[in-house]
Image 1 (cartoon, rainbow, N blue to C red):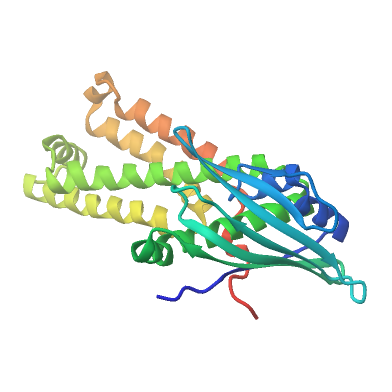
Image 2 (tube, rainbow, N blue to C red):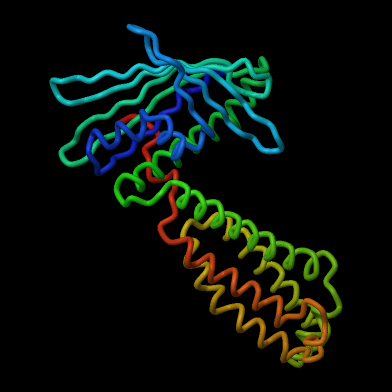
Length: 301
């Protein structure tokens, strides 16, 4: 199974020297590039390309270490620059054995088109190539594109990459949290087990029969599951946060009206929904202008 090289392109409103330094200086490069935890230039020999070592911390004390060779050039005729890269690792944890690629810096008026293309040999034989094609290579392409967008925002808005990544990962943690909460509460107590309290609260609130109460609980469960899936699929998360900011106070009031005695329960509707409302407000604030991989081109042309 033949996999295509990874290609990422982004337009950055910045100066050539500023971008060149941010991408060619190890201490600056490792700040914005999600693929590396650290990059260290080795002593350079005369008339030889620059050698370096890199690390990628995986957590739980696991680290992938590798080697690399980079060479930069400057085309004086049109101001275009390029940097070639040869990299690899003998670490058995790495799904990458060895690869090559390049960066290009193309002046375009007041901006620079910054692009990369690279390819590599996957490890672990046929199984590794299959895993790489469907999982790891798309993940590497996503990480490269996200890193390029972080770099773009750093160059254009002077927002530190660590601050950008903090907002990005917290924003997605909140997204998965709300998706899980809505899916769980729609599926477990409303559809699979249909808890008696759920039906009684509907009966007390709307004064309907038991059968109609059970039907309303079922419809509510389906709606909650749908909303949980929307949290995963819908890109404009701030709109979902705004909806929840209006929704949680309403849910709190209706839950208390349906069963006032619930206020005496541990983790009751008041404390639970107020906690979710606070998390929603935090999510709304930090989710503004979060870096994204979709801002980059992933194909040539």
